[in-house]
Amino acid sequence: MRADLTLNGLHLGMLRAELCASDNKEHAAYVLFGLSRIQQDPFDRQARMRLLIRDVLPVTDEEIKSADHQHISWSTRRFVDLLARAEREGLQVGIAHSHPRGPNHFSSQDDRNEAELARLAQNRNGETAILPSLLFANRELVAGRVWTSPDCVVDLEYARTIGGNWHTVLFAADRTLSSPALARQELALGAGFNRLMNHMRIGVVGAGGTGSPLLQQLPRMGAGHIGIFDPDHVEHSNLNRVYGATWDDADRKVKKVDVAKREIERMGLGTQVKTYDSWIGSAECRDALKSMDLIFGCTDDHDGRLLLNRLAYYYLIPVIDIGLALRVTERFGISCLEADGRATVLEPGSSCLVCRRIVDAGAAAEEALRRSDPEEYERRKIEAYVRGEGNPSPAVISFTTSVATMAIEEMIQRMNQFRGEDGSIANRVRKFNLVEDFRPGAKKEPCRICGTDRIHGLGDVEPFLGRAG
Ligand SMILES: [Zn+2]
Ligand SMILES: [Zn+2]
Image 1 (tube, rainbow, N blue to C red):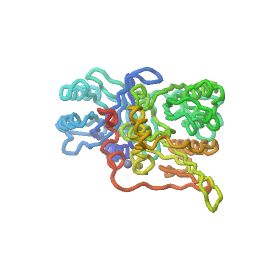
Image 2: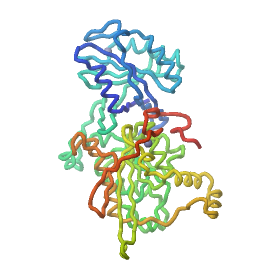
Image 3: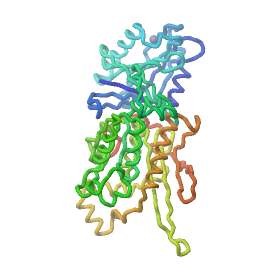
Image 4: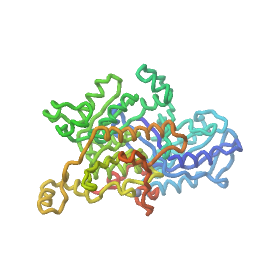
C-alpha cells in the first residue's frame, strides 16, 4: 500500500496559521479528508490511497489540556463528534500537529496517541475508517502518514498543493537525477523541476491534433510517467497534424495511443507509458485517471470534457483543458480564417468549463446516447432530433501545436513561477489572427461543481463523480 496527499493552497494556509503560531508551543487541528482508493496503480501495480483535504478545524484553547514546545494534549470529545459527521458525509477524520522546533518526525508519544485515535475511529466507524496524521515543523509540512488500523501505519510519499501555483514535497529520500538529455532544461528551470517531472504522473486525454504535440514535448521535458487515453485509430485525414503518424498507420487503422507510445519509446528517454484505448468514462480507465497528478484534456468530446471537469474538483487533480476553433468566414466577399486557441485550468479556486460556457451539455448528451444506444442515436439522427457529427472541422498543425504549447507553458508557470508568483492564467485565449492573448472571465452564478466547495476533494463517491448512468 502506498499513500499520498493533495491539498488546496487555502487549506495549507489555514494549517500554517493554526499550527505554526509564534508562541513556540505545539498546536493541533482536526482535518477532514476525502479519499481516493486505487486498487492498482497503472505504473507500479500497487494499491494506493490518496488523501484529499476537505476542511481544517482548529483544536480550540478550551479543548487543550496542556501544551508546551514539545508536547500537546487535548480532549478527544470533539473527535468523536467529528467521526459521526465524517460517517454521514463519507469522509475521514485526521489530525495535524506541530513540533515548532522539530524534530521533523513523529515521536513515540505521537505513535501511542495516534494508534489510540485510530482504534477509536474504527470502533466508531468500522474497519474502513483510517486515521491520517500530518506533522508541521519550522512552518513546513515535514511528514505525514495514515493509520489503516491501530497497528498498521503507512507513510505518505509526497504531498501536493494545488490552486494557483503547484508545489510538491517529496517526503521519501530524494533520488538525485541527472541526465545529459535534461542538462539544458536544468539550466533554465532547475534540478527540482526535472525531479518533479520525473516523479509526476501525467495524463493526456486525446492523442490527436492537440494531444500529439503534448506527447512529443512532455517526454523530452523528462516526464517519468505518462498515461494516454484515446479510443480512436489514425485516419488519413489526421496525418496533417498527428506527430509520428504515418500513411501506413492510417492504412492499418493503428490506434492513436499506440502511435504515441511507439514515438515516445523511440526517444529512449526512459518515460513509462500506459495506454487506454477506451472511452475515459469506462471502468478500465478509472484507476488510471485517479492516479494522475495532472491531466491535459485534449479531446473534442463534450461528454469526456464534462467528465474531466468533475474529476478535477472531486479528486483535486488539475486538468488543463485545451481547445482550438478554426472558422472560415466571408467578409466583404473575401474568405478569412479565424483561429482561436484556448488553455483552461480546472481546479478549486478557478471556474469550471460549464461556467465558462466552453462545453455544450446538449452535445454531451448526444455523445452519451451514441455510445450507450447507437441504434436509437441513428434513428434520432434520421429524424433530425440530434445534430449528428456535423462537418469535419478545419485543422492546421501550427495552430494545434501552438495551443498545446500554451498548455505546457501554464504547467511550467505553476511549477516554476517563471512569470512571477501571480503569473498563473486560469483561462487563456489566443486569437491567432489578432496576434494577441485574452483572459475571458466566467459567469458569476454559483455552480454545483466549481462555485462552492461542496464536492471539492470529496474523492470516491457512488456513483463515480456523482454522474448518473
Ligand atoms: Zn508530536
Ligand atoms: Zn462551474
